[in-house]
Picture 1 (cartoon, rainbow, N blue to C red):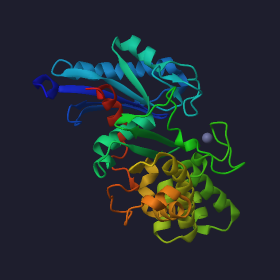
Picture 2 (cartoon, protein in one colour; picture 1 turned 30 degrees about the horizontal axis):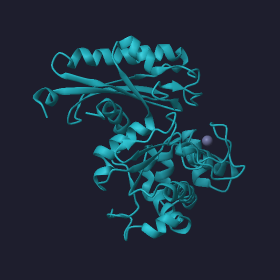
Picture 3 (cartoon, rainbow, N blue to C red; picture 1 turned 90 degrees about the vertical axis):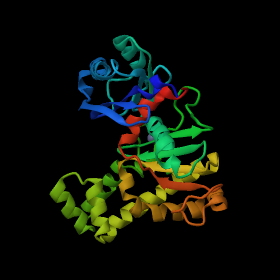
Length: 336
Ligand SMILES: [Zn+2]
């Protein structure tokens, strides 16, 4: 590694439906500086791109005089057509349909920009610096459980983008015939049964049924029940709350069955905010896999909590909410 590369930096942008986070990282992926601002979705895509460019310019001004600049990467909600970063009716960014993010940013910054789907950026970071270190190998599949269910696939050391950049839309694996309608236009998608939104909706329904007094009390206190509060209630022993997480784990196992039977990879990682409830949904997820998944049964490790070589390992993510931002900053450095 050259001396100039030692003192280099790259910038990652994580575009969320609520917040826009921008950070500079050094060549060892240590965070140098950070900015967060609200995503002005209602002001339209041009305004949001201008905000992003403004934040990137400010970090460039801070670090470019002292370090070699390696590039800027953006993780964005999908679906996106790549490499243009053109939005296709993104459910969490209304009004962004057809907008070409990469061209807008490159014209504002006068520099090359790499745009990638946010789930895939998070997968890249987890593979390089997070769960991927527990099970060394060149391939991995990640599912992120948040408002929706996102994902990313690393195959033979590279992010798998698919023909037009839409690979890894794992949240829309169809699980339930004529099931709940999904933002994608389909029905019965994994996302409708294994996301934070899904468990909140199931809790609300249970509270309204009159058969779950503790969950109803939680709803009266909080209005919208946070997945975290529901997890705390489950850990305190409430059976109905425990059942909700067990049910989620069962659906997640079904979604993973499709992925594991198709991909036969050494590592699958579950990330996103809901992974903090791993202890609550993992037992039924593993049970569902052992029951349904042929390839998992043939290749499961002796102890699911201890990753093993040449086995199908399934572990929680370790980088938390940092993964998306870090992965975005890694995007321009992938071929270095
Ligand atoms: Zn869907």
